[in-house]
Image (cartoon, rainbow, N blue to C red; front, top):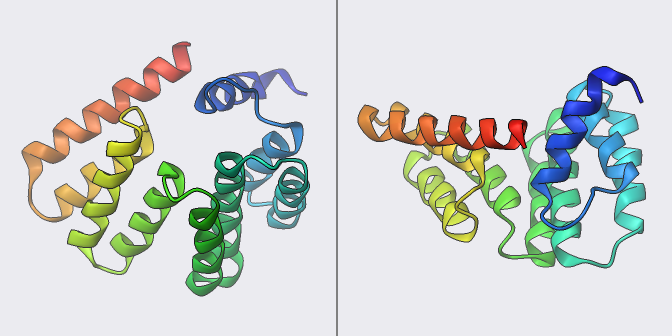
Length: 162
């Protein structure tokens, strides 16, 4: 492992309460960030084969949805998100990703509802705050948007600092 990636891995470890992400999950996340989709998909498939935990399955399926979205489009991503939510209907990651797809499709109210749902499940999930802020800004609700974006920034800073 290169030294420059250590902070990324530390952040990943903190995102999964009580457990260190599996090496295949870490590898897949790194490959996804670099748009190496084949490597990411193989690593996530490997991670999926190593866990019976529904929450972990949902996290991995959510990442596979992002791979599918980048490679094959929305329909393929939705298929993975369905599998994620079947594994864990309370997955803030998958619910937030569904919100992202709705936001991109212009369904602002539905996107906001998904982000708020994710935050009711995990009120420390920074991506949901960030995306909620973006959606609120798009609706013209600037004051609320700024509050959500600031909350996301504070949470991200806390994760980065440890």
